[in-house]
Structures are given as structure tokens and as C-alpha cells.
Amino acid sequence: MGDKRADIKVGFLCNNNCRFCLQAHKRHLGNKTTEQIKKDLEDSIKRCNSVVFTGGEPTIRKDIFELVGYANGLGFKTIQIQTNGRMLAYKNFCKKLIDAGANQFSPALHGHIPELHDFLTRGNGSFLQVVQGIKNLKELGQEVITNTVVVKPNYRFLPEIADLLVNLKVDQFQFAFVHPVGNAYANFDSVVPVMSLAAPYICKGLQI
Image (cartoon, rainbow, N blue to C red; front, side, top):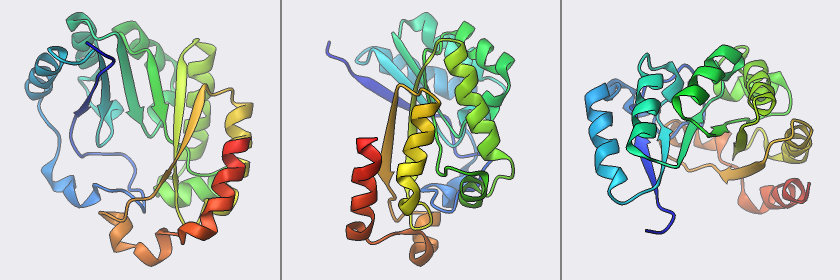
């Protein structure tokens, strides 16, 4: 079996409401049950050795430690949490996730300053929480792979975002060009940049 990764979507609820969110129009579908997700994990271990918990927002689930522990017990070797990073601001929360078996974290950072990140996430205080979360994870010796969605309000600042991520000592950062679906489609003109205008900033950011 090669390195295959299962993406386990835990549902659609989230404590942010990002302007570019692909799934905002599915919020009414709510979250999957603990039992549904455990079944997804049991099906996935037959052909995958890594798992990513994604959403929605996995960290706001009351059963997240139980689910990570269950994945660990099934034998997944990499257990990644894809998150907006807000709950990671609490070091004890990070420790509990790690103790349960999480060993890779993918928090999202969309700005180099609170004004930009919080404007995009529509979550007041979310920038400071993510930055603290990354610091917590690095202090706890964890692998951190950040994701930044490239949108009209932030593309000119990708080099500054890259500088911040390098200073935070993340293991890897990625830039993802926005998909015009969900909120990003509804807000198309204010969210989706002209690719040729964004490209030089993406290149400069990646060189950093």
C-alpha cells in the first residue's frame, strides 16, 4: 500500500464564516455523528495509511479527541487536523489532540496582520489565535503545514504572509488559489483576483 490519505469530512459547522468559504451554503447540513465518522474511518483504514480530519471545523466538535483516538487505534500513521487554528490558541487543547494521536496540523492563515485575516474570516480575534496556535504547536514539537487562500484582498501581501510564516518556523506553507464556490461565488467580484495580477506575488511569496 502506497502513501494514501483519507479525507474525513466531519461536517459543515464552523466558528468562522470566511468570505471565500467553499461550503458556507452547506451549513444547514450540520455535522456528521460520531458513529458516522467512526464508520468512515473503519472504511478508510482498509486502503489508506494517513487521515485528515477536515470540515467545517473539526476542533469545535465535542468528540474530536475521541475521534482522533479512534483513528490512532485503527492504525493510521499520519493523523492531520485541518483547522482554522482558533482552538489551537489553547495549549492544553493542543496537548490533548497530540495525546489522542494527532501528529500533523494544518492551520489556515490568510493575512499578515489581524485587520486582514479577521476581515477575511469574519472572526474577531482569529488572527491572534492562529498565530498563538502555531507557536504552541511548534513548542510542542509538532509538524505544521499552513494553508493560505489567495484572494483579492490578500494577494498583494503574500510575501509578508510568507515572512510571518517563516518567522513562526512552520514546516511548510501552501498558497491555494480561491475556488469560486459557496461564499467565494456569492462574493466573486470582491474575492476572486485576476490570476495574472496575483501570480507575481505568489511567486515572490513562495521564494521566501
